[in-house]
Image: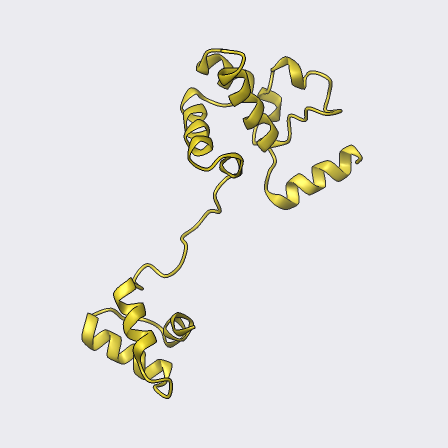
Length: 142
């Protein structure tokens, strides 16, 4: 894989290290033939490996890989909680409607199928005091 292809893939996936110039760990000194400072997941993995396997102090491992000490501990916690997938950043933004509770979803799914989304949205507002768009209600029914 060429350097340009690798960079393009990382950019497309949102996996580019925000500060590759700050990565000073010896493994990344060869300019990216294997260890690639632009690869955020690889840098995180090697940062954790340096600390957990090579016993490099957390602050030193973090600095050598372009992270703060606090950032190191966030990466470590995510890795311990989720394993390798924890090295990939969470998707930004909220996940799903904020006002759509489990109780409302149950109510919406129990309603007769012939009830329109607009009518059901009105019922939800009357019963729960929560204003939802008809499309939100329709999606919740699925």
